[in-house]
Amino acid sequence: METQKSSNPFWRQGDIYFVKLDEEPRAAESRPVKSGIIAKGETTGHAHRLSQSSMTEGASLFLVGSSMFLRSPETGAKIVHDEHHVIDLPAGLFAVVPQQEFDGMDWRQVLD
Image (cartoon, rainbow, N blue to C red; front, side, top):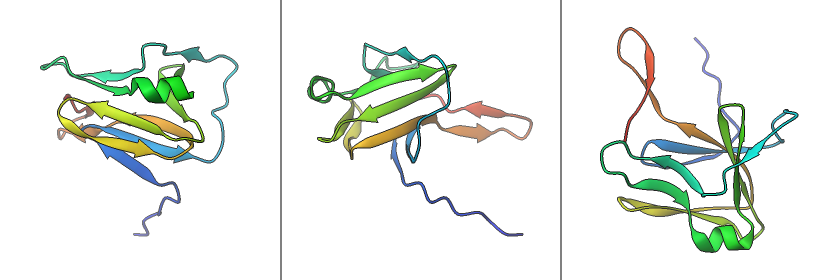
């Protein structure tokens, strides 16, 4: 069996992946996520989020349907979380992908 290699680099913070994209998502409508919160932990209430300084520099989150994307400005973007190290993303567009696991019957999102 041949495995396909991805040419898109990715970064990970806990149960969230950031996959660099080469092109914009195709959608007529997108909705901004003005809070900067990427995902909230179900047990601790801590959140993966854009740093305030990154948002001030122009970093932004938006939804296309139920998929989230992050636009990082030329200065880059910092992703923060109370229980994880800060991630520095370079400039560009990223898909925000929650980690999934297979329980033997079905795929489900990993809960932080």
